[in-house]
Amino acid sequence: MYEYIYGKLTELNPAEAIVEAGGIGYKLLISLGTFSEIEHSTGGNVKLYLYHLLREDDEALYGFADKDERALFTLLISVSGVGPGTARMMLSSMSSDGLREAIIGGNVAKIKAIKGIGTKTAERIILELKDKVVKGEGRQAAAFGVSSATRDEAFNALILLGFSKPNVEKALDMVLKEAPGISLEDLIKKSLKIL
Image (cartoon, rainbow, N blue to C red; front, side):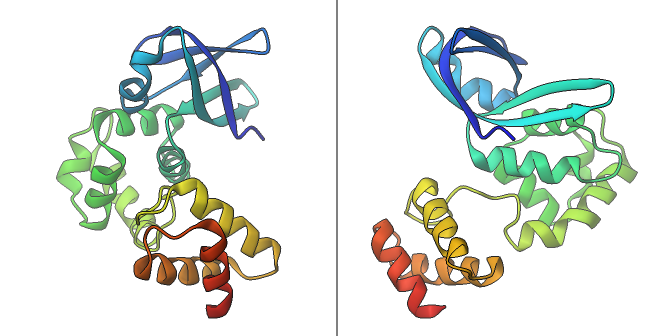
């Protein structure tokens, strides 16, 4: 529903940020990673990517410094027994890349070391997410030299042209391996030739 919020960072602590946009102060729940990224912006403007949690008895906005962290958060809460609080704790305890490596490597001990995660939950996270993480789900940041915004724009443009998501992902990855600093226009053109 909401993609991001851009506004003045009026209050900040390691668990929450208050961002004023359009005269309204939005309370966002954040991870320590996001806190580290924005802690020097107090009083200035910030852009945080949002996840809107809406349940029968609860409503909350989660803020993330980048789309990559938000995508991993979304994957984590898809696992049975992992709620938003636990996912936020996991992202506060490890970097997104560190968490991905632990999942791909099947490192139960590393995941279990996170507060609130037991052996069974760690095993379930690995079992349910290993294939998804290997395939690149839960990763929005560019794995190559091009910015994630450029990659996202190219991805969206190709999807709008009617190509399937898996084929577009493969084509973009192939082009970006050969030309990491490519422009958006050239990225789309070369991907079209592959598709």
